[in-house]
View: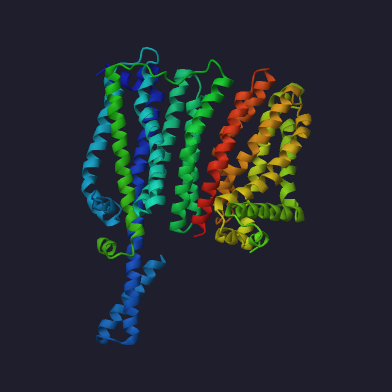
Length: 91
Length: 244
Length: 238
């Protein structure tokens, strides 16, 4: 350790403001580079999920309109699910 | 020669799988290296006999400048690969590298300005190296803007590849002409550190910091590449399975 | 096809390419003469920029003669940029660009012809106007010849380098600002050497080196830029 005390370390013999602000900006750039991908990742995953859901819904709607498959109860359930995903994707 | 590895390298899914294994190592190694180097540089090295403590900015300024310059060359390499072999992954790399390089270019310029104030008594001089770095930032911004302006992925990929190749041909010309201009206009200018034979105790943390910054760049690039892969391969089955 | 029609009497392929280029230049020049506004506006802009500087800085003779070369060069540079926006865009709009891309002749050669006709209607006219501005801004007489030579050698480089940006942004809506962003970094070496030559002449120093470097840039530009422009046009329109 070169400096004797914490205050000496912070003051840097008068250059503290320059050194510390430079390091703070470096930290900000590093943080930006880490955070930006994380945010983008969440956004992309939400997009892809929504797209998958939309495709599924289309399949369901087809099933419903052609009447293939199951009893009425199940069908209304699925329709509600489809409506919900419409709402979600509209948000 | 066996070329399968080359084709594998171009496969987004393969890269996604293998880079998942690299990620923890990269995360730990880069952040620890940067932390060690910066703490070492801040607290455990003696001050410069001329500049006092303000020289400690070197431990971020120099790695950032190195990165900013070499990332552009890497982008040009990726651009050449995109144009010649039409490897999708290379274009994705070209796309994700641009904002990272630009951010380090800004970091280099800002820390340079902050360093300049106590050392030269001014925030900015039209020194050849500073000016060249500023122009490099313009080149980065141009590529990012072009990517944003063209909406089809394919066309944007090729346009950006051509632009970064044009840029990389121009960088030496710009550097040379800015050097010429500077020596012509101001004879006794304040030269940026005339590469002093650094003392080993200052050199080691600097080398560590450079290594750490490069690893950090790799980490961010891999992170962004993985997202780009998910985004572009969203129609494939493996991405759908991965997401849901 | 408009370009191919005229050359049935020429047999060698290289000669055909050459006459296609001539036809292309003639076509572009005819279009410019029919609606001269596109070519005149940048020149008026050039004049106006040169008028703004004395108003904005100082009308003193000494100050102006110091700044004159820089002002004229920056004005010319911006005027060329202005005119570049429509270089490929108007061809894109009326479909002539697709014809160009489908032509059997080497695209870089045709592109070079287009850039040449662009230079004739922009850079060359600006060079012809420069003496007027030199008088307005009190450019010292010893700096006049270097200014004209640098403009003659430098403005074609501006057209060549700018055409790369113009080709890359041909499909972009309102790509004017983007074009500026792409082209200006490429213009910096030209600006440095051109104004360097003029200020060297004003200090009675040799300026041949600067001029030769500008010539090098021009040769480099003629060799490399058409390839980049042609590549850009091809990939953007694929």
